[in-house]
Length: 332
Length: 290
Image (cartoon, rainbow over all chains, first blue to last red; front, side, top):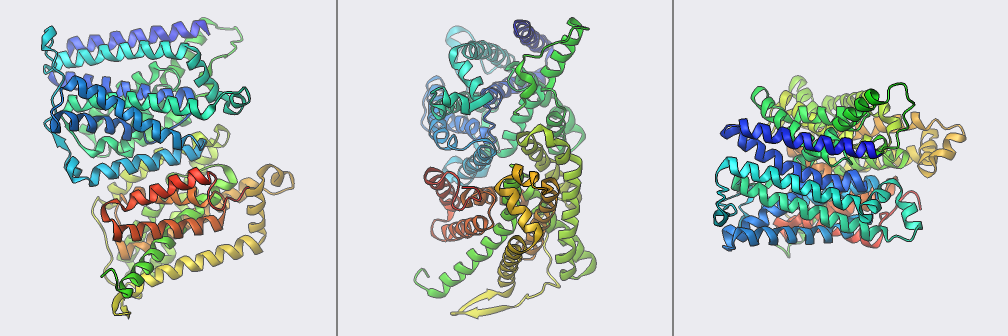
């Protein structure tokens, strides 16, 4: 177990280094892609808290992502609030909405939960799509970025913005890792493994599930505020089920329940989409195929494959006891 | 307008017709879930496939009745393919992974349908049976929509007889009630599941091809119908024919009358209903298992 933890930390460090190296080599377009990867990595990590660690597979996570983006846009572009305050308010608002939604959806489990989150996510999409005040299907433009010129940082420069986002993801990774190492994190894993037994131990299961739903939703909303600042334009597509699906693919392809896996998945899927969209109009087809392969592949995504390879290398001949959770993971 | 009884009667017929489409879709989903704890999220894609197959068959032969018969058969074949290639192989992986795989299938189907049929709305204009209309309380109503309602009611009656009076029906009921005991008693639950999966796929295809002349067909129609269908399944309660029927009527009525009364937020009413049912009766109105 200890070995495995350090393996994942190494992997996370390597991922960060890879992102930083590509940052030093990236041109204008590369910076845009790096920023996109960082934002989606944050979103995918937040979903990992739910789907990977707590075992609550949500298909409506994009709605919370979009909620953060739209709230940020309304606060800044409509009401003229400063971006820093708007980011905070949008994150809190999304967390609050996730708290309310979570208290309802956690009443049901398993496949019910999947269906309900998909339905409620679509409700959010439809609501935004049909609300003229929010731009409807035209979306909203004219969203400002955070102004850090006071400390000599110009976020309107694509390179600076991308670097800031990459570092932000690294900080969030460390914070979440700390959270998951706490007793609270242990409870989440316990809920994933056997919610019934946790209840028998006297744990208010639904309250904990609601709390992580709200927390994860707040992070998704935070990622949404970043996305709004990145593109400076938002559309209902942010809330669409295809976005939820894409983020889920990132998590599963990278490895759910590993925290670093979703980051790797976000990088892989984003790169693949940019490469493939030049070649084909049918990106969704490929995404679906990736999802099916990743789920049917058995192992826990890229991180799972790497770990299996690493174990084979270090403990050759030894009967390796897999005490690791990744085996029954991948939303099992 | 709002005090006109003819207008309300037309809306009532509209809601019945939507309910019947939802019923055709949800009944397959709910019984499969009851048997195997498994939900095929690509069920809506099969609905779209039924409409698109139906369109192509009607275009090629000019015979809509042939489309009504052949399209469900084609969709059933696709369902069999999904089962053999994917779902059967995922047996041991557990229901959660199976559901995720079918979620991937939605993406695949959506783009495959766009590839073969394009993204435009496709409609058949000639050769539709019951293309006339009739007058009721001073309102003109297309006969074809009445035909949709009849198809739904006929399927409900047929499924009721199948479930209550045949060996397969008894096996399905036993399997939904308690899969383990049923298989101990010699019921081949796997085979029953396969049969039900095929019937469910065919019914989804039937819903698609029957809906096509009234609403036209397009690649994205599968996803937009999936969400109300899932709501029907959850509201109605899993595994039961009665639940699917009652849920369909409830959701179909809510959506149709919501559209009339508060046009932009009709679907909100549906979600409000969903939340209310979840809060009061988390297992749905008529769950098959207590």
